[in-house]
Length: 115
Image 1 (cartoon, rainbow, N blue to C red):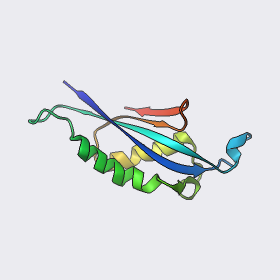
Image 2 (image 1 turned 120 degrees about the vertical axis):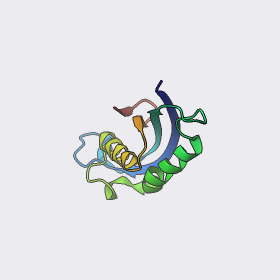
Image 3 (image 1 turned 90 degrees about the vertical axis):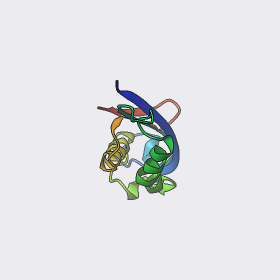
Image 4 (image 1 turned 30 degrees about the horizontal axis):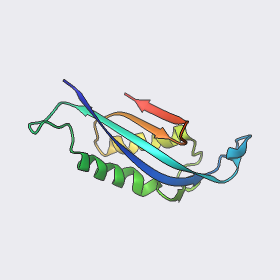
């Protein structure tokens, strides 16, 4: 039986999309919310991953890189979709058994990547 475990995170960041015809062309910020879901079989202790281990991995691989940054310094075109793709790649490189990530750019707008 595969079990899914999800933990939520948040970070603050600014960006601008120079190609955008609307307000996103201007410098602005977001309070991003990130949901990271891993999946796997339960181990001998009855867990897929310890929540604190998941927190530490995501903190080091993602939050420390993105929190309170100007995203244009990190990504050439920091759309929500490309930020999510970068996060996905970082978490895969950290050997997490990823099932899904959801990146909320606003209260009503999100990007989802799943296996």
